[in-house]
Length: 169
Length: 295
View 1 (cartoon, each protein chain N blue to C red):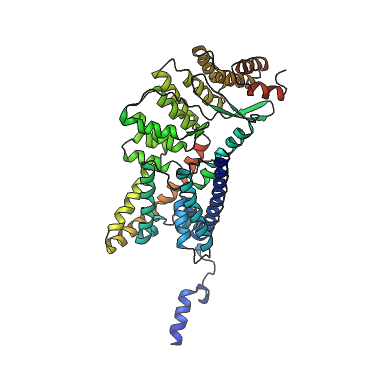
View 2 (spheres, rainbow over the protein chains, first blue to last red; view 1 turned 135 degrees about the horizontal axis):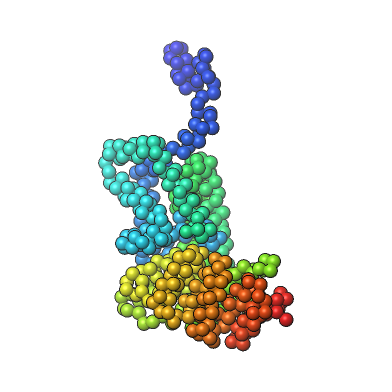
């Protein structure tokens, strides 16, 4: 029993082992940056059925409210400061996309198609059986870890937003 | 007016509190979930809101989330039900109540257009942000498209759209539903202008001018956009053209006066401010005299 406890302790605490480096590769700045950059964002969301249900409900409700001309969720930044945030105009652009006005939608927010695709994925994920949902979530996780696509998209949106507010595009 | 202002102030307070709560939760999101989810929360406040509710017990922010939720619902109800516009309308309410026009000047164009110009003095340079100008005398609309235009027009309050993104959506729908008139393009240009997307506004005004070359208001609006882009010579050309088409236009005189002022042509600027005053808008000349530009 004593041996077993020691083994568990060793496996959970690298400093217990003799001759091991206390500074692991995880401590280096390069590793931390790359680890954060490639950290999955969408996969944990997709893997949680309740969370996607809530997110999809809010997303569809917001889209419906804007589509029908009612007041939807108000952007706290725009409402208070009068400055558009990176997501401002996204729902309007998605509503335009659904009506088939691609050109106008892209003019309003260039990332609308991407977010609409993500929303579609979420809606599909809701109805997937548990085993398929796990597989789907793992596939998305691998894609995010390998390509860093979510980070690239998010950072591109921030750059796009900066270009828009300074009227470069 | 007092009622509207009171509700407006209430909405300002609600919006500020919502913003504060949003930033509190956003900071926690950054700390707990990392930068990527933090960025996601920044541009999708709904995600921040949902995340806040998911972690409210763990992070001890139940009260914050409950207050934020109540305030959000109240804010969402206040806008359409009570007819409150946005917090940004408060300066206008105040201006209308006091009648003080030393900061904001309202230019009424003879073609029933009402652009508004913000002035801020900065050394010998006035930074003007012409914010609007809506041609309210739109031509008769086809039945099926009238709704979108009417909805867009309903968003127009004072001198700007209460929600430019919505206005943009409505005008785009009106345009795509074969109501692609010069007025529709010009009005969509105003929505772009409110969103500070001046290049797109210029494109829409140009389209309006292409459809109706005698559309003085569109020239005036395009001049305002060029002004915002610091293209003073182009702005001057447009104001000249607007005045050529419609000489009795206090608004365009005032705007042209501003362009002259930016070009350090004080004499011409004073002349235009005076002409604007002769046609009923004396805010420009008052401002210029107060600041020692005109005698």
